[in-house]
Length: 550
Image (cartoon, rainbow, N blue to C red; front, top):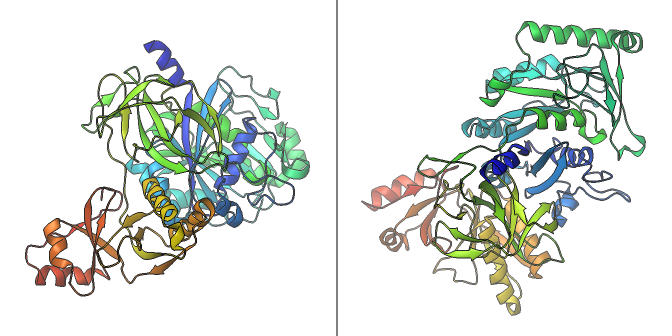
């Protein structure tokens, strides 16, 4: 069995798609699914006309605004591999969701907008990947539109984030006049024949002189038309554009910007591709590259820093909780990353944090909001456990030898608002909805003696989380509510004695957090902290560290 576990793990590629907002994450997620033949046609981000909306943006608010609000998981087979793809929200207000997803993957695809280059959220996400030692593949998107110079983009990545790009494709034609790419390495696996065409993609092998020409498919909903041109034909058809691209590609080799597997896995280099996800240019090469070079699951370290080998008994951790993903399934789903062993539906597992045992009878594999029963899963897979209400984000479950994985990041809130319910006859639904959103980690829910249980205070990383909360209360529980923003900017942890001493302190409020029984003091600014310390000697005020626990 142990050799079978290793073989199945070796087939898995589990990665996240991350970027700044509007760089095209949901579009490329759907395009990858299309190239993997998991779907038959792609829809636009907004689902215009008679086209379906993207499979990963299942929430009505996401479809209305054309942005990703919550992460989504998709699994499909490609070549001889099983691809577990996690789409993430790009907006900074939902950073906590993105950062948690990054604990559950083995690699990341970073999208850059070709016209904008590195943006603030992109920089932050690169740093998170570096800290977690997650190898990153970079896809420079929207090359079919006006863009920065390609060499300028490569230099910007290296100088601003200190990771060396190693382009594996190079664009023929400037941004907005995209002709195709020079493939600087082969794609498709070691057994493929260079220059051989199958299903619109050139097979792997050493670099073949010439280029891949792209043409948009009719309607833009199918894979792009791709054609391999030998060097003579490329020169004849694209002349100066091809010559320039070839010279720049040769220059990259001279400055040692060629792909290297070892430095990629160490996070020192980032293989880079150019393309246009909306018209499916370059997406096939990206999917092939992920299968060819992305790491398969490895032994993960537990909370004590000891590796849990893949062949050990089953283990996994909850990195996300989500309810009401499908109107037909009014239930709650715990997203589990399988870390070791074989998962079997119906097996008894133990929750490391509470010590209680639980059944896994209702286990599902995910494709956006669509779900199917799964009977078994292997390291790297994402499994949804239905109505596992005793599980919280960050919990470990296992069978056999006990293990506990490190806690997941929790962010310090910077925005606070009192949630006002307008129809007291729906108080029971209101309480159920708030408890559910709190369990998902959408917001932190706080209560105070001053306001009472009917008026919880929400603490969030960004104000857009408040809009999500009220929209979901209305859509999923038929409970209209509004937010009254409060004049606070930060919170500190205190103990029961500190909570009692500060209950009447001017300019601050004291709350309890039922999720873990903690006491929080919220303050208008950092200067108030010093006056509190001066006025209340010995008071406990501990920071809630961004990216840490709290």
